[in-house]
Image 1 (cartoon, helix red, strand yellow):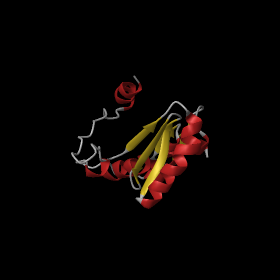
Image 2 (cartoon, rainbow, N blue to C red):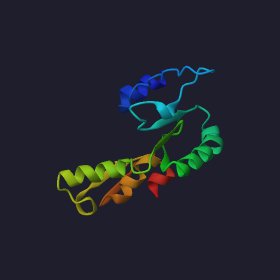
Image 3 (cartoon, rainbow, N blue to C red):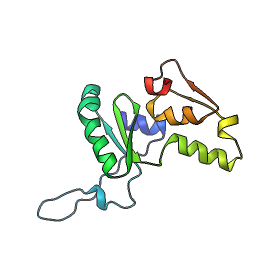
Image 4 (cartoon, rainbow, N blue to C red):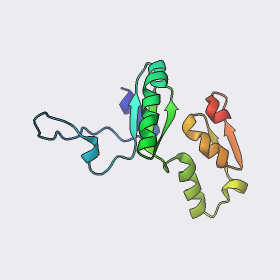
Length: 136
C-alpha cells in the first residue's frame, strides 16, 4: 500500500480519518480539524491528471490561502503553508548549528520540493534522475 510505503520510507504521518460533523448531511470538514493541517497530500497514479487538472486548481487555492504547491513524487502533489519547505527547514537547522548556508552547506536532491534548498546551498547537487525544477 502506497500510504504505508510513504510512512515507512519517507516518514510521512499515517492518515487520520476526520470525525464526521453531525449536520443535516454528514460531512468531514478539514477546516475544523484540530490540530490544524500541516500539509495535504493529493495522490493519483494518473500523473497527467495531477499535472494538467489538479495542480492548476490547487495553485489557485494556494494563492488564496497563502500556501504553496510542490511535488516530491510524480504521483503526489503537496499543499503546504507558504513558509514551510525543505529550504526553510535547512536554513533554521544551519542557524541553530552556526553553519553558513551560502558558504558551507552542500545539499543534494532530486525533486521539485528540493529546488529551494538546492538553490540556497553553497553547493547544490541535483542527482542524475532529478526533475527539471531541481536541475535548474
